[in-house]
Image (cartoon, rainbow, N blue to C red; front, top):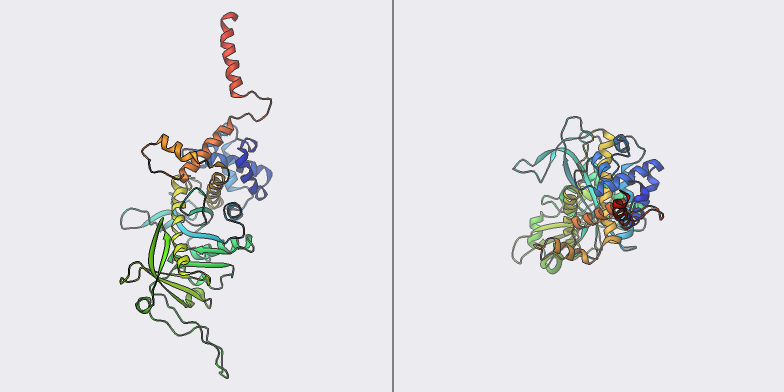
Length: 440
């Protein structure tokens, strides 16, 4: 499959990545991207080649060398995917909501680059560990017109390398957020993550980035620093007195009733707001702590913290609830798109293949949202599978399946106006069959 055989609606999206590659590498990129999206089976490197219909036209080394030796940068590819999603799926000038999490893609073999034992929350049994490559994934949370839930579109991914002198998961997450904010000047980037993504690496966070996470129960909170006393000597205090524990704060806080929409339901919860410092994590930047109590008279459920000073308690609770969308996006990447199934082992190939697959997933969701959606898609799905009587919205699998059909159809579409159409070929074949007895 060649770039001029890619569907026109997809060509427009893939063209955004052209400046990242040389002309031959971009041609390979388009072919492998379409092969990855059209392949219903294993998405290995050779599987992408077969999915594109190029197994007999291109040597398989061309596909492997694209990941291991070609001149392109995985970080730049993810950033381009992020800008594409933000420009097309987020209203102009609106804040860009971002969700971050890490996941394990299981691998085997001692020679796989950066493979090691990591925590794996999906592993069966009490030992939640697995062997493979661990990735920090950043997704842009969008509201699509045909879904009621927030959808995270994964765009950037960074490999966790054990033993590296630099890169903790939190450092990688911050680095991706900073690159995204720099690529979207004037846009506020609002990051949401779980409690694992709170640490000293967040000190000195740029003003254009806000960070919302779950507050740990043992967090050391301090009051805001007092003003400088006239005539006092020495450096002014950078933080106020130590606040009581989180449980003690919740016991004395004044809760108000707030209606929030989270996880598809509207609920009324109690919320108490405290403005303070979490100095060990955010330094001197003031934070807002929202203590949430699900039922009156019960202990507090969770405590959330954000660096966004303008966010209300309702917005903080709803924003944190959207974090779950990145979990769904990662599961879709594995189960629907087959990300992580490539078996390459060298450092460059390992560090490039998953970001390439994540970018293809972002292009697929963007394609469906901008060009592929039809209100009849859900009805057609229910006709094919009548047991899904309650299905009302297209799933990620529906988006991928429709794009797959469009790509496969484009492979058999005439590339030039002077070529016969399938109908003309059929009529000509019938004419030959009718003429065969007379020729004999």
